[in-house]
Image 1 (tube, rainbow, N blue to C red):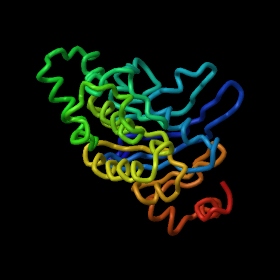
Image 2: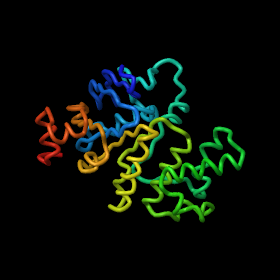
Image 3: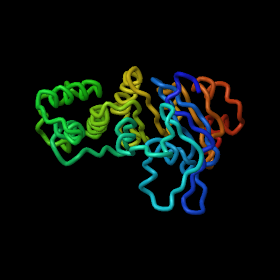
Image 4: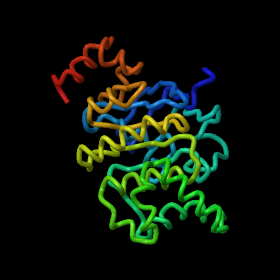
Length: 253
C-alpha cells in the first residue's frame, strides 16, 4: 500500500438482503486530495461513501464482504470503535442538517460530548472551525442566534464547521451542494480546495462539472461497479472505458 494512501479498498461487495448493491470495489484513496464519486442515480456511489464510516451499519439486512483499510486498520474487523471511526471520518449530508440550537452550540456540541467543558477552549474550537469553513466573518456577531436563521448555503458551511470541530482526518460529502444555489455552491467548492490541505475529502456528486472542477481523482460507478478510477484529468480527457466516455459526454445517465 502506498504511503500516501488513507483508504485501501479491496474486493468490497455489499448486499441489502439478497440484492447486491456493490460489486468487487477496489481503489486507493490518497491523503489530502479530493476524490469525486460520479455515476447515474442508484449506481452505488452513496452506498459506497457510507461504507467508509460504517453508516450502512444502521441499515437492517446490510452485509459487507471484502476489506476496507483506514490508515492500515480494517474498519470492519476486530474491535473497531465505530464512534471513534466516525469522529475521524466525518460526514456532511445532501441537505443541511443543523441541530435545533444556536450557531455556537452546533459547533461546540461534539467537543462537549468528548468531555471538553472549558469555555476558553470551546470558544477557540468554535472560532477556528467557523474560520476553516469560511463562515466566521458572516456569523461572528450572532453566535447565540439559532442556526435555522442562516441561509441554506450558510447552514451547509455550518455543518462542515461542525464536522471540522471533531478534528477528523477525512470528510465525506454526499452531494453537499445539490440543494444550494450557484453562488453558495461556488463557496463550498472553493472551500474544498482549501480544506484538502488539512483533510482528505471524498465527495459524491451528480454534477460532472463539479467533479472536474474540484477533484483530483474521480471514480465512475455504474450498476454497483467501479468502471474506472483515475486522476480526474484522465477520466475527463482520456477515459479508457467507452462507458465512461458515454456518461461524461451525456449519452446516458
